[in-house]
Length: 349
Image (cartoon, rainbow, N blue to C red; front, side, top):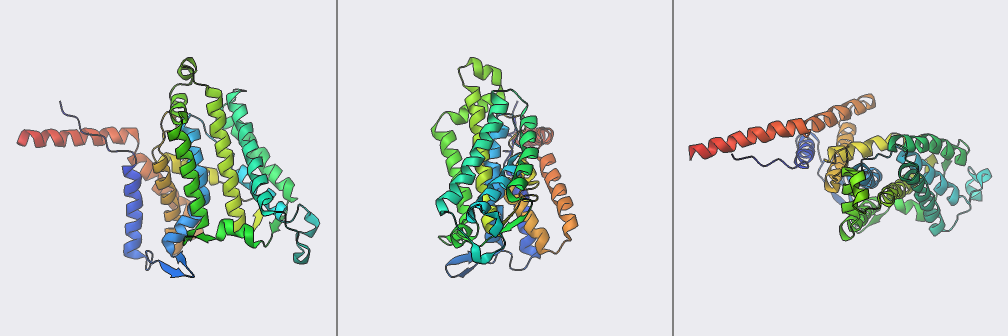
């Protein structure tokens, strides 16, 4: 009996992205137009790459977390903490001068970058310890940091919106390198880093093993605690880097709203990309496509002038359709139909 080959999970997200791009090709003027100004590329497509960077950075790390059967809903709060620390570092931590442009004091650039990242890594390690060593459920462990972290970010900023000007730091979120937005290049760097760690070391296999069957992995000699610790540390690092990108882009930090609900976009991108929530497998390429779907859809909605109150609704509808199409049940139906077509074709020969 002949069986049809299953359609790859990434095929449906690519198809959905293609449909959105086709819609813009037909109905949105100059959507694909790219211009060069001062050696930099500009256009809607370039803007999509730049705007998608913070979510893409977080989603790549989230892919590995979900592959272990876990989840990290604290990344939005970690992003806010990172951005708040960076804003304070730009001002030397001296909050009494936050609104006095003539009294600015800038900490060294390396300090502005490293301290928020170190703090974010430590927060990720906290999640990892709670999950791997204490034994809390990932949702509960990261919910603790999600709640406390948002409050900590607001304490750091004193409940104020911090605004600043710093040409060097602003380059992180607004700069261009080789004609491309620097945030997008940072996102590519995170993808390369994650791929190198999971392909050039056994970590990729360990992540899938832990997600597939943690107990069996333990018996096989895999240090499951260190694997879980790694994915949450990497998630914390990615959230911190996203915080730096976002803060430098908007030249300020609003601890109450920075990164709010971004964890949902990151998780959605991972699931849309074909990584199952139960773990055991991961698809970083699919995650990239998932992020591009979300950001391209958002840009399309804004370009077409659809009221902002409908934005989340339209995004939700498209996401639901994509998820239904690539669900296991739908894949089984499509596989059976494809198999019947192959059998009919074979009998006709």
